Length: 119
Image (cartoon, rainbow, N blue to C red; front, side, top):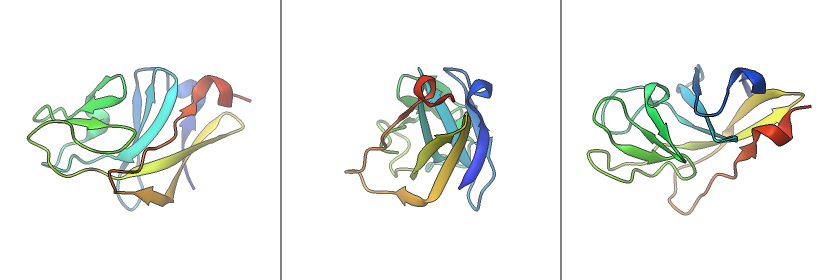
């Protein structure tokens, strides 16, 4: 488990980048928490610097959209998905489990509700 930040430090519509073997972006999408690999699969750009639109993040470099639930791109120029990671909240702190990541389109990350997770 990798600690990200406290739930109160990640308001809706915001993201945070955490260091791991591969950088990870954690997003608060209207109260649902998601984590994906931070680097766009099209070109080296930080997705945590992108724009959050519902359950999608837009890459700041070439405007590719990635679904936070599946990691799948929904438009060009990105063609490859990014990995999703399980998010857990314990005692008001957000953690990312990098050992349980997926890269298959059938996988849908179950969001953690930030409002329900605050202890």
